[in-house]
Image (cartoon, rainbow over all chains, first blue to last red; front, side):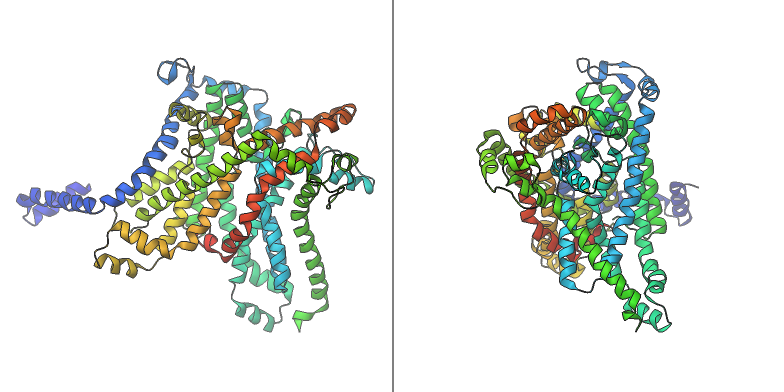
Length: 327
Length: 297
């Protein structure tokens, strides 16, 4: 029985069927009253809703051009429909496999190292009792997170060039020179290491906060039971970190196709396309440099759909098993 | 005492050293660039500059700041950061306040929240967004840097969570006295969330100062681009130059005279200065856990 049927049956049972109409109008009136009372709230939301509708939802309609042979002169209404032709062409493009491999490899490496490095750093920093020393260290390691990849890209060009300071240092111990940003075997590693370098400090804040939140009595109890520092780490600290680590890991899985366009756009060059070209940079070059609007949108849509599925699953698991609450 | 066991003491010594090295690894690259920017061309070409300027001089900075296009880009960046941050914060507060109401008080809350949330999960992508911005006649306009990103949804969620944790009694008392929504927001909510709003503003500022991609795709006219976009063009060019060095060491010498390391470093450093200036304030807030408490966790 549907809700409406149930309501009617209930009303009939109570002998109120005749007054049904009155009741409904009473309900709508109540709802209207509430809406009127909340009108200022709705008005406050209006600009935001319009903005998101225009710049997020209308473009979502624009994904139609992924199924067209879109021509700017014809517009979205009169361009020719080609079905899945763009996708077929995309997947048969010889470099597409390579681009997917690059994307997943770079993103996964960043994900794993980007999860582990902050935890290890937080554990190491947590042992330091000298408050001033810890404070100075924190100040320095959080800083790179706030600088843009434009600046950092420029810094790494200076640092990692064949005549840069790093190669000069390696030369002193008889190594190199390495072309960190021009050699396909080194470039993905350069991307991954510099990305972890930028983010590990800031990402450790949440673990440090969790560590200071662990009940000291647990450590005292463990010490009384004869547990040394190592045993305390295994039996008290790590279990204390586990829930937050789980949530972070699950949420970051949603970004498995986000290899970091911001970074790569500032560090790559045609010579390292073979190892550093990712879906996002490909979409950009295809769309805005070669004006292949339909193909670019198809590639972007492919990524968005996978991203949507992964992110939804990630939120679902984080909320269900990690006691994570979004809003 | 286990606390003072010998292996632990050894570990502690290594811990101090290791953590200190990590801190230096994070800081030395910035210091190196600063030193390069203050050294002269000869010292840089000879590759003798490490973390301290060699043949100290301010020529690069003078040259960069005399450059009209650079000064103009700097001005645009300052303007976009100020205007953009103000717009973003106004929009964020206006959206976070209604959404912080209970589902009983505002039954449509959940619809709005999902409307915003879905927009963060899925998008039309680069080209459809570009076409909409174009249709809105924003191409080559300063407002292309402000309007499309005027509502940071992540910040709305942070602030609404913060609002929800404010004591209900204060609001109820104000309502008893006949205060409307605007009065409650400006008289009760905002004064109580000064720290959160300051933090979010700082993050908005950093975001605007750092963003370069919108300037590159929406503004074709170089003279309208913000500093970050200008620096991106510069950096991409130097990546290509390094590439040339790797393929043909013969061109290295000629490039040395064209690309001036200390000039580029001075430009990068000027791009960094505002971030370094707000960084102490930023750190004060984020280490207190104001943001983190509600971001993730």
